[in-house]
Image (cartoon, rainbow, N blue to C red):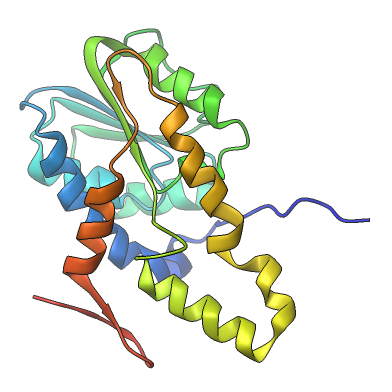
Length: 215
């Protein structure tokens, strides 16, 4: 008998050295790509440790920003590192957002929607809380390809222990990533695909020992 795997992150201090540093790089390209005018109300769904939220505050000049994440540990981390008075962070579920209809001009989900059990419901919630004419957008890593840090790690892990193949994030998440193309709704964008791959190539060069930022 097998049970479905569940990815759980709870410690911001543990997450940051692993993926958080790369999350901040791709967040910059994503926010610039959206090119949303200043003074808008933003919602960051699955905000995690605050990488995308902080980038929005620094590059998009929002009127307000709310970050929502199911992890109390991540929310605590985000509150601790982001002291901007325009931002607030709440514990919440992407499948049932703690917000009124049309409460935001922009709703985004960075590197998270593939972890949500019901992605269609999360996408519908994003659209629900976004005003008509606003923007809903999500992006995820190219787990099976150009997110080289993870790809190199799992390739090496499977060589050392073939049983690790079932835990390979590329194998487990790629099907979900491909399904994102089906979640396009009115006034919504759900495909940053090629931009994420280009961003990964631009910022990351992976070697046998460690990934290196390329200036």
